[in-house]
Length: 192
Image 1 (cartoon, helix red, strand yellow):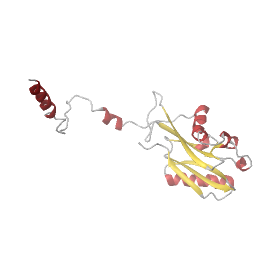
Image 2 (cartoon, helix red, strand yellow; image 1 turned 45 degrees about the vertical axis):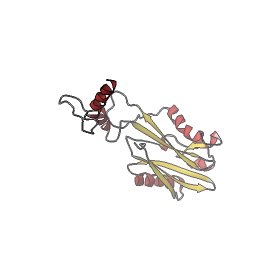
Image 3 (cartoon, one colour; image 1 turned 120 degrees about the vertical axis):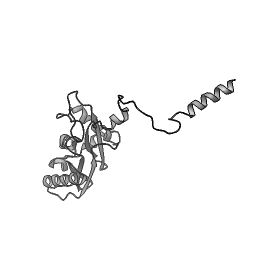
Image 4 (spheres, one colour; image 1 turned 60 degrees about the horizontal axis):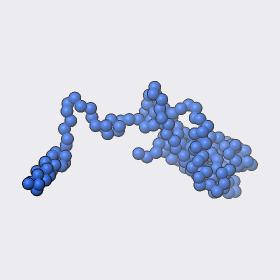
């Protein structure tokens, strides 16, 4: 008797539409599954910073997502980013470099002032121009020149990888009056 009951239960499971790989039908008045709704949801605001360890010339990119306010409306690319970024977010951006550097004082933002060559320290760099936001640009670029072992750089935001690199090179060459031929760029939004 138990055997028959078990066989009957197995047959019921194996005969269902899901077991045969058939499409499940939704009622006319039902909402679509959440997976379809989520695929249309705009991406969260992402802020991206370029950082460097001056002792090793290693570059890092830090990304942070920002939750939208309840009244925020999405742009074409993502939810809007805040106009003012709290200092604690900038400090957290440096953490990716600090976790890997031998000395904490060698971690700086990658957009550097003219005085950086003489004073290679954090106060000769700019957090706000080392950062790009996903609602305004799609890529963050960096361009540098070498002074001995020291990389001196500037950052720019662009609508493409090429534009971000070109803008960063233009900023670097205009500010430092040097040929900035070490360039790179990365998407602001993390891959999905």
